[in-house]
Image (cartoon, rainbow, N blue to C red; front, side):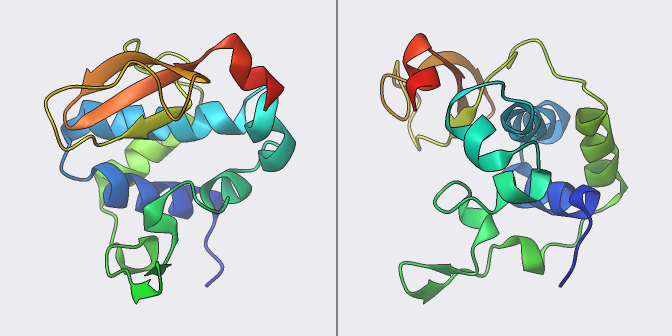
Length: 146
């Protein structure tokens, strides 16, 4: 299916953070757009300021894959049915808005525990904030060498 960037982002927001409330969804949308707007490192090189390329970069968002480790992933963006709030948050993030707690974070993940580790995915990202079930990480100087 040929979805617009807005549609892809709304679907990813619903899939990755639909149960996290407005701030959780805004935080996830902010990470995607921070990657789109990255001025250096892996996301600038691979993403080339494209929402589509960022969302579909292999290994980044489980929701962007309909298969995970050879098994069908029913929780994927193709099965999402975004509502008006998902589109509003997508528009908000595309317009350049971010929630202050997330700032320029480039990563998030759900640790399935009460604690967020200090770095993610390696030393390239430093813990910034926890919003709902997700931990958010901002780039360190090491990220720009990726």
